[in-house]
Image 1 (spheres, rainbow over the protein chains, first blue to last red):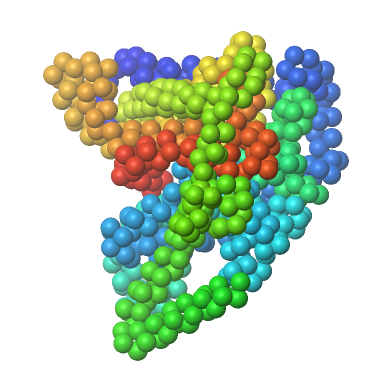
Image 2: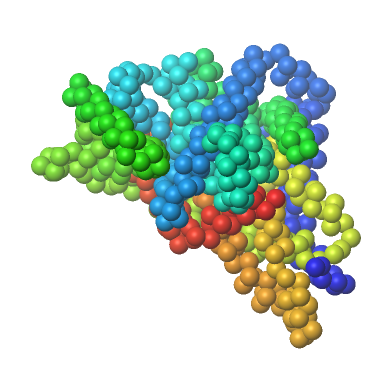
Length: 295
Length: 309
């Protein structure tokens, strides 16, 4: 029931949000539109160049690499990280609540660390011969003690993915676990009695009844993946986050380098717009697909 | 090398034998054992970097490479040391005299605490208004707020940087704090929490002569305390660990925050990894302490926004 209240109260409650958003969101947002059409040198000097920034991006091979790398990372995030998170959530879901709580805490703990610290920590864990990961892969799989995770181009993306898995699997697991708890147990039971296999029960009963959360988590993961920056910049700090042969170059690393380090904020804005359009389009498609799945 | 491999094979063989044996005894039982074995192995993998870090920060440079985790107790006198911390805490020269690591810690604490406190206040007020009042433009405002969450912050950073320079806030903690005093995500979370507050309760308070501000402070805030606790952690984590904006907005050696300075140390101490690892370990403590106190509210609060839809 809504309260029938007349008066300025809601506007006053919202005033700080409205004021701060107007100044620090809407104004920069509008400026970002115009800025993309300028070539700038630091924050003070600028010259109108029309669509040249976008034309430059269209032909810049570094930008292409960044776009491909980032898209690849987003795909892997959704296809590897989310199934892993879902698997963990399913494994934990049936346990007693205390043991579930303990493990949930353990799997979540990397999230307290933050991306920069994870990057710093993993940059040492990946050290050839001495790092925990190179030693671990060697002890378990007899492979990798000499692997140059952070300098060998084909291994750079997998190294970034591995660090991101450590960071995000537990995080997404929390959402899936919470959603699993709300799934109607009697529906699953009914399907089981009708002779459905565990896999069928999951695919046809459990997953559809938690689709809201799944769509939410997929969208958040894609949005996060396209903004990948802190992990590569710290893991690959020797090459400004680019990695050998640009193997670890992402869109935001590109934006950071050309926009802020080289001082062309206009080009940075143009890259920002490309990222924004990609995120917006993919999110809309996912919401659509989520809606279609409901019918 | 081969010794370790053998151990692993025996462990795997043993596990397989246990599994087969249990399978003959009780199918459900063996499933449960297999399930918790997988979970436990996963947990070990997830926790091992922490164990490695805790051991690593106390080891000398040579011991860091020699032993994976802790060296045997008998060798502690020559392998374990506090030098990493000593070197971390030493003053680093800058134009304004030596800067100490605790100053960065203080900067980060100020930034994260101020942003978190102000965000909790502003976001709960906004979320309450969106959840419990009817007013013109409410639907449009809600849609705008949700849409704004999809805009990547990197897009706004360039014009925001220009603005911070124009306002004279560049290279000051205020420049990092002020643009982040409100968060659309926070408003959304508090809106979800306030929707569950019964309207009758607010009406009753109104009949008793309580002002609108009084209702917010005395009726609504106590009821959404779990969400406030959850959001407190989310906001603190995000801002304690923030890197992109502080890295651009702050320049002077004595103004930097912990993640920015650790990223710099990464380059300085390439040969003495123990030093920046010590800093990394210290930087993990404040979020961990906060998490310890707020964890119960945190999990339920974080997920409620998504699960309720």
